[in-house]
Length: 282
Length: 215
Image (cartoon, rainbow over all chains, first blue to last red; front, side, top):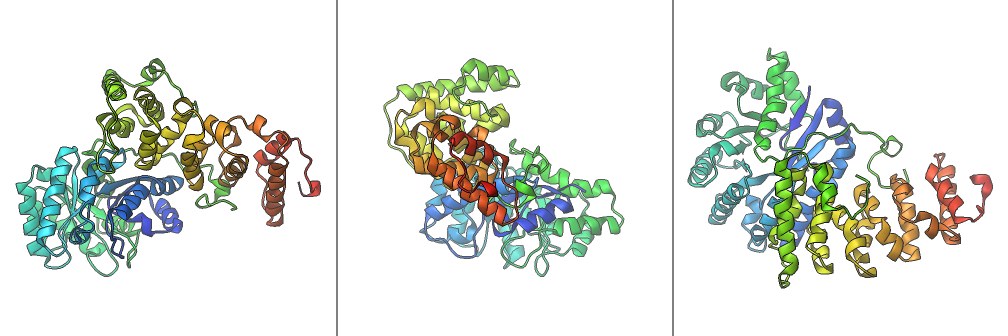
């Protein structure tokens, strides 16, 4: 089973996770920029974070045979802090980088005017840079948030077929599918979706334009949830081709809209004595 | 790609996959050449000159295998000065930083860009470490920093073939020999192998190991 995790925050994960993900079949991933749990207070700390997504994290991933790409944006939570909004002015120089495959995560958190501004501005930037957009749907007031999100996307210059709506669930999938956007589902141990509910949704809605991710981060989450969905699909009678479409071909097609995917990461070899990250002294 | 700069435009064009990439390169080089003629504008963390956008996009336009060569060529064509090189390094992805490091020998006379080597050698990213120990490091790193660079290569598994002018700089360096011998002793004490390259560079120093029984 080859797996592309289209949404995972590897900055918060260990090399054990990379090893386990490779063993489970993960060969590519996208790390969306998001908030770090602790609010940032200046654009400079965003820049260091973005630079890590373009430097250190792909290096770590490559040592475990996994192709790492990222999406860059000012996330909706921190878009509400005027100390952080100058990040928007610096985004264009990040959006030209080779491994940036979308603008994201953007969307709504509390649906404030500041979030309206940041979302509209960043959808325009995606259109200007030939990039698709990863748009997350809010955790609170989700259905209303989804409607408003789709309205803003429709008003933008970015066609809905270049947008991935993420963190969908049973209550939002229909409207999201009707919008023409790609459909993302985050599978979590407690919140969001679980693998059995995911299988039920796949039965109802089919596998077309559906992406499944672990969204694993610094919270309670599991970087192997993509594999577990694949296994649950097979157990429920889906074919290996169905699994491949959801776990590989759909994310490749969506992020491939950027023209920047590089999936030819060599097998991990020549690791320093087969050991972990090259800290030295192993 | 292990060849070091400078690449000629002809070399690079011959490596490109198709006419589209060659046309892109032609436009990019023309923009860089115009920038070389233009009066300097103050650097900004928020904007980039057009050829600098090409510098960022070189991998996807020309293929990742050619990105170093294309980027180095652009830097040369734009006659990038120390301010520009520093900005492009600081604002660059790891691949862009590597290209800046590789271009240093042909663009910077004197030790003024050593701060970029220092930055790269502080990382544990072997792509940057190996690009930082090229001819510019051989010419300009002071003895202490150079010895630590050699040791860092041994630590992180960067082959010492990447260290430019290794023979000349290692010759007669008793302090390097001591550091290598101590490192070998530490490895032996931990029950670990001694990197083969360590013996090689120790021999190059011409110094006798202080504790030969441990080697």
